[in-house]
Length: 220
Image (cartoon, rainbow, N blue to C red; front, side, top):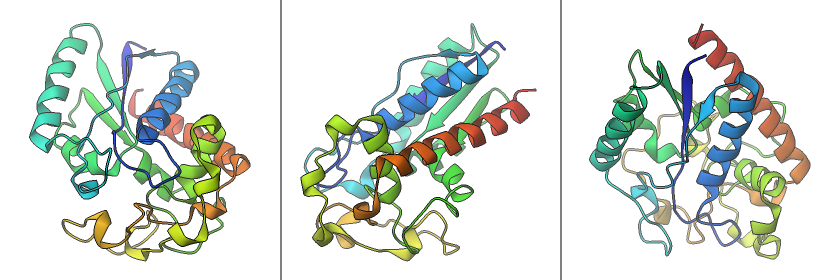
């Protein structure tokens, strides 16, 4: 297949226990697995995204939606000289609405947050609100993919924050213009105390299976 994968993450706070590049690491590893599975090319990961919801926390480096859109249009213009389709693998929820404006017959968007909705039911341990940011799912993925970058001693009960309407399996609409600081002083939204590397492996493998199915349908 003459297509190419473009991973996109972010550089932003992920609580006291996860690195700033969490979304970027996850997007890169998912894309590497998909590239091998589908036998298509992969370009370097874009590590900055729209992170307005995490403003006010040290380490967050965000770009405006219009900037992300312009950068991706320029990258796409270059890639489409060589490839038939670009598959953007997005692992940061703040990028989602911007990426939908880029979507067309030659640019496919596969979103981690949206894909998680369909696979969490039998994998999660937390109640509604336990998964969102630096949570059970993201922390499990990092414990599996990049355990050396997880500060396990910082995963304590006092950073847990359940916000049910921000959970990917919630049927409630996202609050307009929500900010992490209004819900959590630690930067965590969810429950990382329930994270394990074994769970991370299961989530990762389920994501690859589901995303592969989506792409095989879209690209044939």
